[in-house]
Every structure is written in structure tokens, then in C-alpha cells.
Image 1 (cartoon, helix red, strand yellow):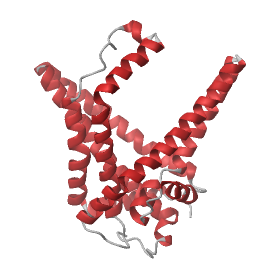
Image 2 (spheres, rainbow, N blue to C red):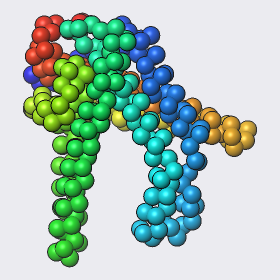
Image 3 (spheres, one colour):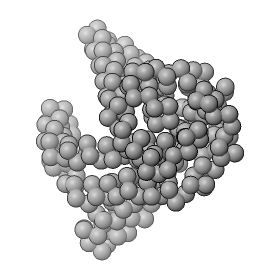
Image 4 (cartoon, helix red, strand yellow):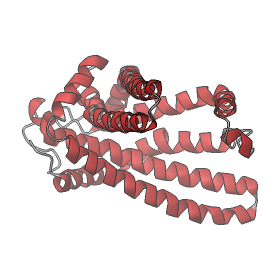
Length: 275
């Protein structure tokens, strides 16, 4: 089935509207609060980045970034895991065949958190290797134009592969597929023939998020006049709020896409629960 972006968006808004209090609870607990806490409590900025010489020295830049990550890696990991549970829980919440409670949906999210993390690592390691090999081959030849061309091709391939695996979350949360490889394969099959439409749909969603983030961040800058700490809190609040809304909508969008491209019919759901 070809993806109808308008219908997918209508399904998304219908699902969120029908369960808005539950969506808001998940978004607040698993998206907003962890991001707000990280923004307020984590070290502000990367130490040393204010030095313009570091930005021009790749080795010094990697050393500075490595030192910063050494400080905050555990907080970032917790942040990612919280968000995974929330996203998978929201996806499971809209499983029309089971109609789970919020507790059951979050239990599914918790159970699928590690398999989802492993699936992401498999995909990302593969993408990094692809890009590294492509750029490396171009670098070995010594031809700059070839290196740029191979890098561009690798980047396009990375975007394509990412879209092919974008339904891994719904497959795990709704179908209960805990095997990361099986879930990735299933997502690849479900997106067949719809990759370009899914890419355009998610690009438009991401564009709206970026514009909203920029506008609200400019508003938050006004609090800088009230002192540094207030500015940090305001910026963290705005960033956490926009991130929470985006992740909640993004998660439900993936469920709508999953239903349209064959997930609902193949899991026994004969009609859209919210239509």
C-alpha cells in the first residue's frame, strides 16, 4: 500500500486527540523531565570550545569532545534509555489489536528498550562503516573530487538505509518482535515502495520542529537579561518542551505510517481503531 501522507497525519492527530492525557503523561515523564534535568544539571557547553584554535585542529577538537563525553556519557545514556521507553511505550499504547493500558504499554517499552538499543547500534555501526569505507577509498586515490563524490553517495545511502529501518520501533512495540535483526528486516520489508514518501513526511515534520525550536529559543534569549542561571533554566525548558512534543508526535506518526504500509492488516487489525 502506498503511503498517503495526509491520511497518516489525520490518523496521528486523531490518535493523539483521543488519548491526549496519556500522551501528555508519557511525554512529560520520559521526554520533558529528563531533557530539562540534563539541560540544567549537565556542564554548560564543551570546555575549551571557546578557543578558536581548537576548532581548526581536528586532534585537539576530538580531545576536547572526548573529555566532555567522558563527563556526561552516563547521563546521555540514561536520557536515551528514558526516551526509548517513552517512545516504545507510546507506540505500544496505540496497538489497536491489544488496546493496552498505559502501564502495560510502558511495560512493553521497558521490555523492548534493550533490543531497540541493540538494533540502533547495529544500524549506526553499519552506517558509520559505510561512510568511513567510502571516504577512505576516495582518500586513498588522492582525487578530491572522487572523495567528495563517494562521500555524497555514502551520505545518500545512509539516509536511505535509515528510512528503511525507521519502523523498527513500531515492529518491536506493536508486534512484540524482540529480535533486533528480525525487527530490522521487518521494517525493511514494510517500507518497500514507500521510502521516498516516508522520507518526505519525516523531513516536513523535522522542518516544523526546527522552525518551532528556533522561534522559541529566540524567545528564551530574553531571559538572558535576568541573569545567567535564569537564562540556562529558560533555554533548557524551551529545548525540553519542544523535544518532548516532537518525540511524542514523531512516535505516533511512526505508528500511523506503520498501519498504512501494512502493519495493521498483517497483525490482524482490520480497521483503524481511531477512524
